[in-house]
Amino acid sequence: MIDIKINKELLGASGSLILDVELQIQKGEFLALSGDSGSGKTTLLRILAGLEKANGNIKVHQQEWLNAKQTLPPQKRSIGFVFQEYALFDNMTVIQNLLFIAKDKNLALHLLEITELTTLQNRYPKTLSGGQKQRLSLCRALMQKPKLLLLDEPLSALDSHIRSKLQTQILKLHKEFDTTTIMVSHDPSEIYKLASRVVMLKDGKVTKDGKPRELLLKQNGSQKFSFSGELLELKKVDIVYVAFIAIGQQIVEVVLSKEEASSHKVGERVTISTKAFSPILS
Image 1 (cartoon, rainbow, N blue to C red):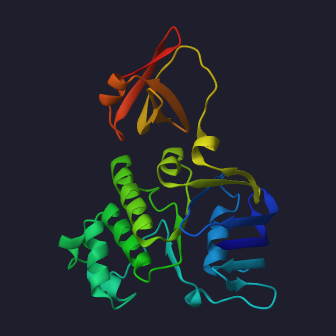
Image 2: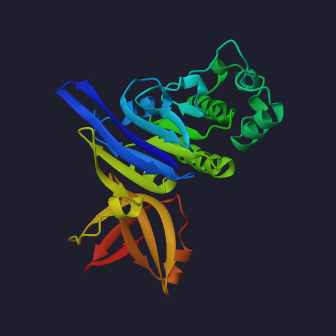
Image 3: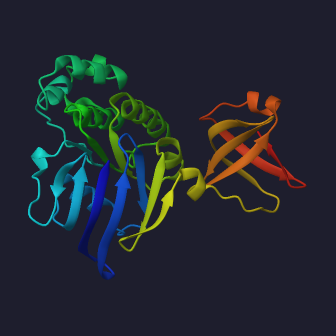
């Protein structure tokens, strides 16, 4: 269990505001932080990592990281932090970047295998693509088997194909290492795919807290339309199937027959259109 109760004054372009957050996060949970720019998402991650000061209390699995008397230094917190920037050592090979964090070659090779970097282990970061560098950054963060993995929009600079592939690898690593993960993201399809819970911040305060489907899904009716999007999930409900589709910044659901569902697979681009208010997926 992670208990967070902190407050801190933030100075932004529109003036000052108070970051005032109280959360309880279960061990092994994948929590997404979302909200407008400047709402305090990245600052909250940095406070958890010990990179910024704040008032309040943080307790992680019965260990006090922050209270009125002391602040645990960053190096003593069991945390993996993946930024938008890669933060790699350019003078070290891929495998050396990992072994610098922990001298555990078996773990390093296992992480490289999961993230499909094994054949690149003797290459230097400057020879890697953006997606490969981000995978290496993720491996580095997991080398110390952290209690808490913090992801600050790590995939925002990557194209949609690479993002989708890395999202799958992030989820696989999260489950295998049974770590608690907190991710900052503005992408509803990414949140839906990865997170078990989403917390929305506005002006430094928590405004919504719940399951991604409950907070992101748009269930209001619509007039005739035709939109394309990514198929996120196919779920059987009684005798029908429900398709969950990301369209822009929204997620919609469409009811399908067994035959319609069998002709689609998660991850593909689909088009939703209506005729007399009966959605057709193609």
